[in-house]
Image: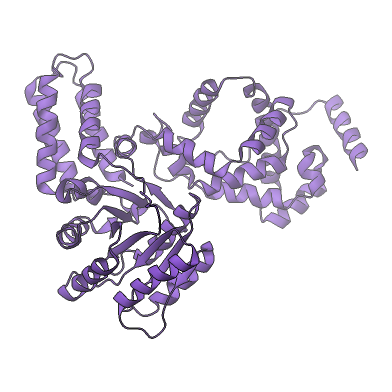
Length: 476
């Protein structure tokens, strides 16, 4: 997300930093380039103009011209303005007592509204609430069936009425069913159209007037740019929105909708969809998003993702194993799978401060899959004691995983080296480990690929070979 805009803005600040002594004309020239970058990212014209005017006033007021580091000062000014442009945002859902809390989801066809209903239901389920989804989209073929299937996948009940043509009646009955069933939140999936029309707006307005929802969210496709912003403006005039949910955010390289919707409509972005899976919904934080846009990383979101995927007790056990040097390939496999759940390697690395803006475009995630295949082709004994893997075992593992014997050997050697490093790192503080990890990443990942599993290692002495053979025989 925001790749094109991030690259252009970083070039502007880099050029400003390289000038040494600057004057007012240099600042104006830099902001003209920023304005063009925003317009190319499909940001609303008035929003781009206002943003640059505010940045110029602050730049001249803070004496960027006389600063020893004008580029850094400009980055700080632009960061603050981006936060102001997209915020403030309160991502909390306010639940009413007594329930149920009613949330109405509106949007155009193809925006991902029905899938977002399921994502939001899963998010609410994770907060300890009991949601019910109501199928009020009676226009689109198979919309009811889609919501039913999604509900089964996430374990959330779906209220539906086969053959009914009145969405107002379905919505009212759905709320009644939630009261009887003890559900604390009702999510209404309403009908959409290919474009905004009076019939659709009237239908959604009738549903809203009848059930009186506590929250109304508009679901927009981030990739449609200004069309999404214009749709939000029209819906808000008719429905009085509480917030916007931008879908397909991970596929939007420009980011015009995210930067424009709050300024144009006055309504905040509450959530963003960052993937196809039903857990890929995130709260929208303007300060974190501004840091990502400027290539400054997002360490808070990275830590939150890690906390969701890594169990605290398991991490303590792993930490103890690292300190003892008894970390096995089975443990490594578990860590590998948890990292894959956090997202692509490129997305993870971009959140590390100081590293995101330096990453090339072609980072290879396939190396993680190849590592997993090799480890899964080993026996339990081999995973727990890699010293057992001799030539014949190596050939068997290579055949089972579709890799070359050299790759199997390389993975084992890399793992042994990594285990030794982990033992040393276990005694370091958290910040020291982060610093070391960042330095290693900068050195090893600037090639655009995951660290290769084939590595060069020093040859074993005759005595070491003899000890290794004896150890192998003893463990058979």
